[in-house]
Image 1 (cartoon, rainbow, N blue to C red):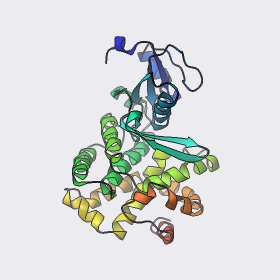
Image 2: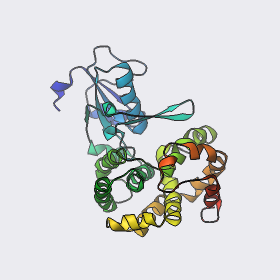
Image 3: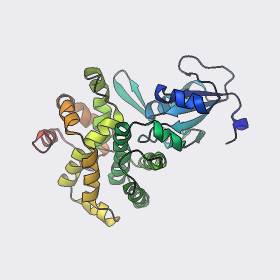
Image 4: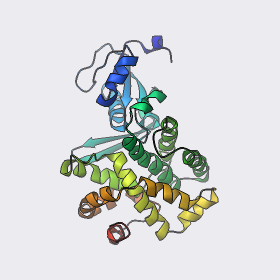
Length: 298
């Protein structure tokens, strides 16, 4: 897309990349939620899943004639390629899905990978892998979609579990794929615990991606142990379940798991009610909390 096609454009970006963005682009910065030029034709949103989803919602709810160009500054959520909007409202996740939520255009800016701290990059991969694996195992996925996600996970396995610009595109594909089926317990836990954990432990860096990274391994083990058909399904599509478990284990943090455990226990009923938990590949019931409090993890 040419610059001339943008018309009057404004950038909204996360503070962590604002200096880098301003040093490379001459377009002014503004936040649409507080101050936005009325004659703007294009909003260029540069950020992670939170900012991109807020941008998608603002366009649809407040400025439907403004075009949205979405540029991820962090992989994982794939919000730039997803018809889903996830917002934090009153301590809970509000989820909307509609094809009209897709941005007018998405752009991959590979150099932004250099701005991502290594630990943050690895946490974000928890979200990326959870999207792919839960989307594949979802009971709502069909054979065609599972075949597509299997090829995607094979490509993901070839990348390092760290900072690499190719994760931008692969995470976008993972998000777009799972939007065609659903996700599961990893996301159910992440959506339920994120707000309370941020409020209770504000200095621990909690967020959706970190929670996905922490719970991907325990939940994947749970799914495999409670339904062997999950392992067989992965093998049918040429995927090694044990190799995927190792990836999940490498993203896991025992210390973070222990810090989140008390809230998982107190909010387990809310986890069970989450819409993502209800499409997990194994039916999750109240007694299953015992699994997540055994010596296997704590």
